[in-house]
Image (cartoon, rainbow, N blue to C red; front, side, top):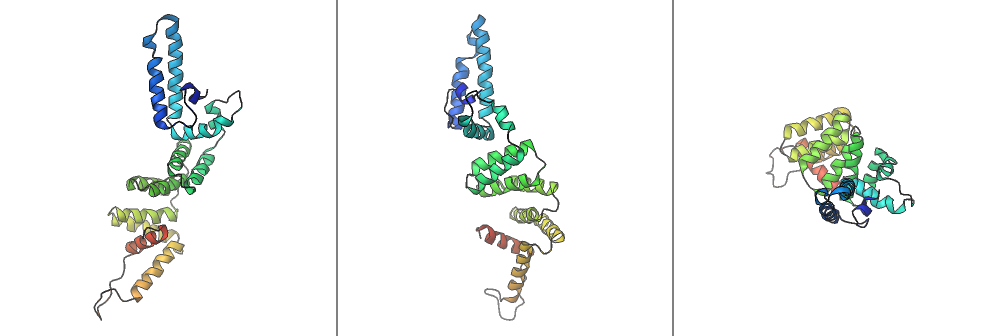
Length: 237
């Protein structure tokens, strides 16, 4: 079954076009409008419409069909068979490529589908966090994705450092400090942690801006250093 043909729309139809086509055809073929043999035909058609809409309202499945159905043989492989040709790793790789190409919406849909198929891969959740960070949406959703990543991979230093920065942004300094300390215990020589230490040494060696002569300089906190470093690394500082 080609769900685009079932809904009488083109393969590049937008989500809004898909929804409108489904409602139009479902109204036309609703079984309550028919009697006798025509009613049985309408019921079959109505079920087919519902199945097609169920497939196409899923962003990841729709993307798969948009890329593969035009290239499928004339006999037409069912959408389920096409989907089974890809592994969760394939979906995650497609998400990573889309993310690197700046196609954030597509990347989010693809990594969500990879996670749906295999939610035990910490790197999938870390990638989801990166996608959500770029979108600039709900920071708590970013934190949730990173917390899942470190739950599945407790020694994931990068995710601990990212969590520290985000918890600081959310005003949860104790939790931020906890993740930063975990990162130091796991990998004290990690490049980002060394960069924090260098910045801390530089701050303690340089006179503070506007500081009175002879007054002791207040050292920059580790979380403040992390926040400053994060801004520099992500280009937001």
